[in-house]
Length: 72
Image (cartoon, rainbow, N blue to C red; front, side, top):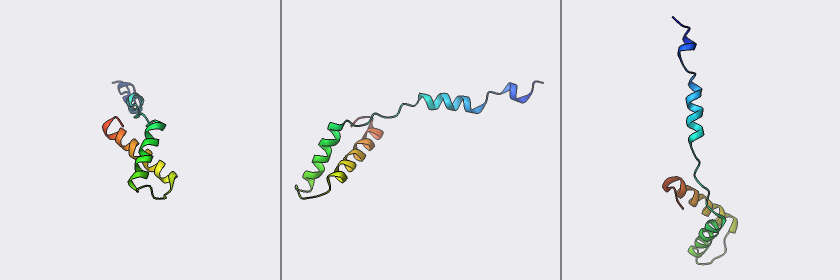
């Protein structure tokens, strides 16, 4: 009977091939983020806010949409 290690393929071989075949979703474009951030600003009726927060919120929403639907 051959040694056990010779009869079996190492587990990490199939995982690495599988992990390498996973393509991360595309990131939203700067223009898409800019448009969504502007929509967030308009939703506040143009009142003062934090533009950095608007940008981060827009990027987060678009990345989540891409992850769920595959498109922005």
